Length: 159
Image (tube, rainbow, N blue to C red; front, top):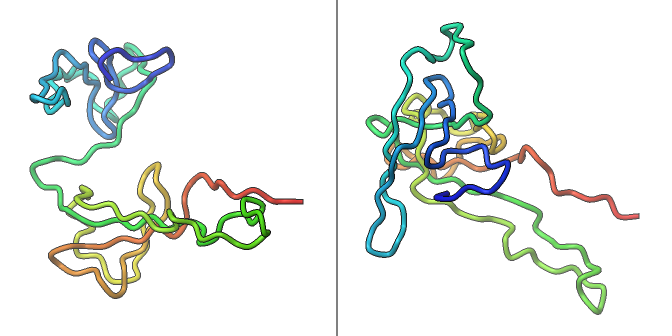
């Protein structure tokens, strides 16, 4: 975000965040393409702030989870949700199919350590939910992960 809103604790120009398991970084510049989309972010890091080093000189409010571009692996993620919507949305009281009951995300970047996970094996992807390796479509060239539980449920009990 070029001009962050109040209480935006993520990476932005002049803002500092922690990279999970690494260092504090500060955004110093960014480059846009011909459509105005940000394609590069330039940052500096503070070598004294290495995660686990005991550094307590200052605090940052945001922590970003990241994957190293040099060795990450492409994967597919299928985000499953409720198949049916609440029937109060239909004038006849009939169940309505949820058009977003599955959302497929292509080109997800994952750690190389889980590339060769066994079919059915389960993982927690930080801040996303619990996933299992798809037993039918996952393969060595394209691991496929199915979300089985989201971390924040949007489920509402109706009375």
